[in-house]
Amino acid sequence: MSEAPAWRIVLADDHTMVRTGLRALLEADPRCHVVGECGNLDKVAGTVVGASPDLVVLDIALGRENGLDAVPTLLGLPSAPRILVLTMHDDPGFAREALGRGAHGYLLKDAAAAELIRAIEVVMAGDTYLQPQLGAQLLRAEPVAGGLSERERDVLRLLARGHTNAEIAHELFISLRTVEAHRAGLRARLGAHHRSELVDAARRLGLLT
Image (tube, rainbow, N blue to C red; front, side):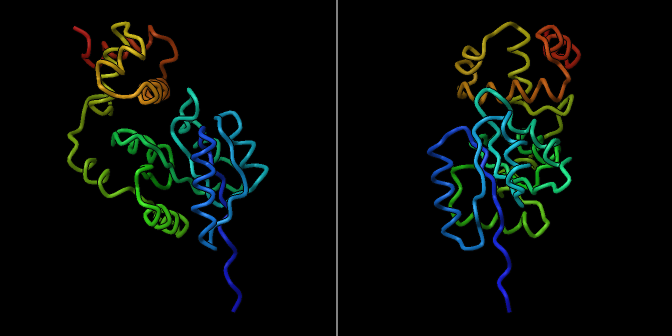
């Protein structure tokens, strides 16, 4: 009986050392074969087209861009890969957005190596994987106006008031990269590409008084 072919995997993360560590971890499992890497949003689609992977392991923060913006493009390819989001962002709002855009799994970077392999197994079997702690948070979360999480509403309110990304990070005790990812996600979800449009959205949601 012949062995099943290895899963062909592309790593999309803007940190070279993270990609190197992931490659070593994954290729220790004979079922995983890393066939491509990229570090910014502009190169994700081209790398996937060139490598024809079965799976893309995708970070949300690709430089200053939102990696989730690549999901619809990847899913529209003739041989669309499965997509597992692997990120440091533990806000359940990000998980909701990722799965809503069509990603097949969401896992935090502080997960154990065995959980990463388990997530890949689930995703490659055709199911959806959500890290259990985030699933519990999503179940507990109360619906909020506009479909935004409380953290997204906080970021939008401060953006609408004219705060810089750095000021928002300081105010909410989160990293600058997290603010940038939230900002990119808000723009995509609200269709707001200019500050005036973010202000209008915040006003409609009752975030400005």
